[in-house]
Image 1 (cartoon, rainbow over the protein chains, first blue to last red):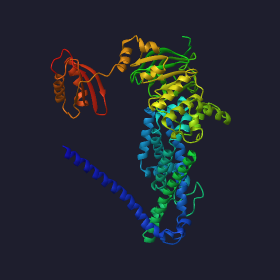
Image 2 (tube, chains in turn blue, green):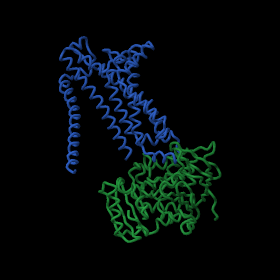
Image 3 (cartoon, chains in turn orange, cyan):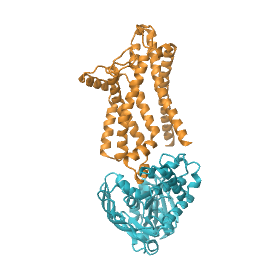
Image 4 (cartoon, each protein chain N blue to C red):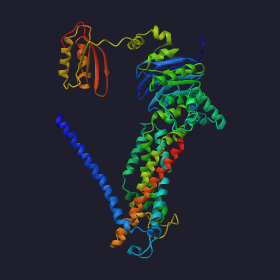
Length: 284
Length: 338
């Protein structure tokens, strides 16, 4: 009896360790690949210049158009999704009760939206765009990516807000707070770092998504300058470069992937540093 | 008695999701006294308390009928501003919940949302109520550090200062000392004693000793019914109803003397457990008590009934933890073999 249980225990433990290794090593492998293939060709010129004629055939220039385009699209989309998503998450958790039917329905809808592939958002954005007579543009890309990250943002915030104890809300209400005061001054403050994490996760997803910008953003070699003109984005830049038959251009594709990863990492780190700084300032 | 009624509860009935939690409770709560609310878990104590500031309405599918009059005004009436009501009624929870901000901000929060903007006035208020809850000397040099860094006892005093800072008339306490160490608990008790000179205090407590130390009035709830209420002395020493007597004596009688113990926690079959208990009971004298430890399958389910039908008396069935149960059986004088 005991032996069988012990064996079970060890077997499961071994499987868990194996699974952890597989997952973490594939993450390492991805990072190593883009660094190994991309870093040697990553030059200052690539980061600071727009493509010159023949860039995709191996001539000079850089991907500044796509870097700026992605940052603008990513930040604007996440701002839009957060500004509309935060009220939804607060409404679910402060105004509606734990087991409210409305809250269950909204969460179900958001989970469904989360599961929809991004190409569908792209196609949806494209349809709307065509209906409105718009062309592929920065604005269309921002709206489509915002739609894509909206459920991720809201559900992420929602999970965080659900962790705020009911007793804390009661304590706030017991002092005579309104729902708004409880949500804004107590619940949000308590959950602040978690809310920020939710936004960062959604940002990472949004800035890296290719399918949603495929039809809606268009592509251009110039820097983003108008909401209504096309905009270059990193995922598409990576795609175009990797799709060429030239090894040196493909290598630039890997370098672009490295840049994209670095942007996500940098923004995440910056937020964390800011947060640590502000909590230190608060605790002085 | 020379004290005015502060809160008058008339026919208060509360349902949670169709289940009756409070059953037609009517009672007058006097001003400037401590009223202790006692009773076993799930008896409706907390429901009663939270219906005095309408916090009960935050629960799902709750229905409230009847009236609660504070200073003659029905708090469930039309046009009652619930934020106003809650300003009048302060609450201390079982576990202190400090707001996620500094010590200073915790106390200033209430006055601020109720319209005090003047900095100097806020500073005065904060100092006054921190002194009032005997926290000032401990925190005056770190007013702007996060309140979450205080010890749990200090946090509860901060919660008291925070509650007092909105100048309530009634203080509700939901077992406010049960999560605290004995010294912190005593300080809170002292504070409540002092506060009753100016407020009416309603205190839910699990501790009969605490109720005896503090209460002027006692309310005893059982399964949603208000069984008995009156002056503390009368309820504790001359209870009128059998249920009150049982509850009070259940705590004050010595624990039954256990003559033998039987550990069936390793046993897996119910039949085997029943036979083991039968065998063990055969070795004790009539009237003696056997303590049985076991799991849900072997002990809690079925065994008590078969013991009862064999003429033994079950004194207690208690869940000890996730898997283990404890049963106290007194051997009956007129038994058959199990």
